[in-house]
Length: 242
Length: 390
Image 1 (tube, rainbow over the protein chains, first blue to last red):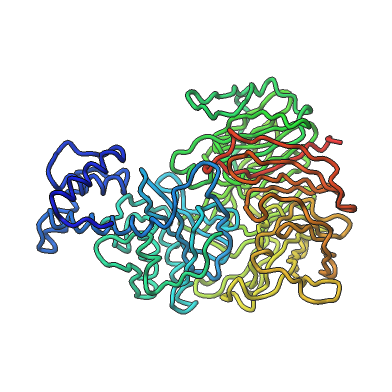
Image 2: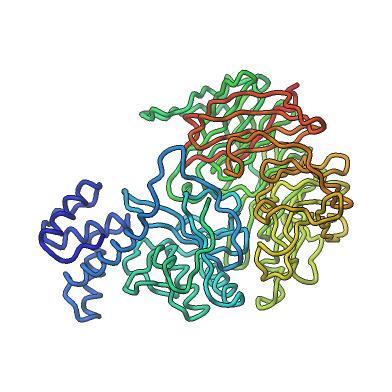
């Protein structure tokens, strides 16, 4: 569901966000609702960072800050909406083995949620039976078995419509450039590559952009979210787990 | 290479205050190893451990289905070894030996993903997946027993691990110093991780070119007559899809480094009719080979492959609540197979069954209640059976 800029709609969103959990700003301006949503979907990012990013993007694009926040919100909400095909997992269900991919460079998209928002998670197959995870600042990135990795039901596997040589290059780029990089908490403005930090969809998007020149962000904008990659016209879903 | 001495004993049980679903546990000092028949590692996955998850368990079960737990900080893919009245296990901070008392063997670094764990004459060898660094790929090897451990790092991204006698070997695509050219397809490297040479791995062989295979989970591969064996799909080339190709046994001679691909066929010589996914999701362990026969499980079928010919026959069908759910665990022993059937992550539907491989008979079946230990964020991993359980 995408809310257009209207006082009634945003007031309603403010009520919804307030009931969803922490992060509601003290400032009662109209922009608070969008900032609160972005905080909830990007946990660990402060309101000041969101507003600073919006201010910078507004300047770069000749927009007002409110217009910029609305665009950032719209992109995020569209990603959450795209992810609602996954039902939230309850204890004792919803974990299945990811299993092998078809080729190196294939992508998987699995359910992941934060504060009730389903936003998904992306990964690249380093080879047919391993994926590489980027744990964050405290650990090196590492290759782990896809055969024993448990993911949410409805996880999908995608191939990218390029040559295998290009897929190999994308996978190699991803993992050569993940070494020691901290995790990027920001999805709403993450389309930078090379970068000093990466999150999952940024890494997948960036690897394919650098290796092949194609842009896997299906809806453009300043942020690339996991379902933006899955919904790209360059990707083809070939399997759903289970 | 670091030598770590034992610095604590008698680890106290941690009660999860305020958590109504906390499993029943007790003081490890009160646990008599001989009273139990099964040990199971339950842990958050490594991604969750990296993001703050900090509780896993070693669960013990007896013949009546009664269980107890020891809380740990978790270890994804954590193994467990049971030998000589002692249980060896680990978590993110330490390796442990449970005997008359619990011995805590702290490591000098936090680890979240165990690649393999092996029984050797001196005790145990654990291999931890450290990950990429600036020059290649690292694993941490920890070896020792209750009196202390030694630790060192090795170069390699192991796709298979196994021990032959008192040596632990790894097979890896070339990484780091073993890569001659970044632009060329990488060869395979067979190295001995334990015992080390000058605090590092010893190279047995580097192949002339890449090996175009994709293997089932092979990090506890069996050894027979000095060769390590594991199940793979042999591809037409390194870039081919996993769906293409044929099922094989990979055989690696740990003395000469010779590699052989042994095609898997039925008794008529026809390629084994298993889907690539069934091949890659199959199960086997270090005790799979008995008298030249490689025992493994694909879907719910126990198969027996002659390692010299690749001829494979079906032995029996195991009783699984949900085949392929990724939760059930298996351990081969002399002429027997233990199956820990776990229906789902609630832990409500679980049982341990011992099968006679020759007859297919269920010799023992224990119903288990694993609620309180399992959940969508706690995954069953290593399984060990008391070798003295008659």
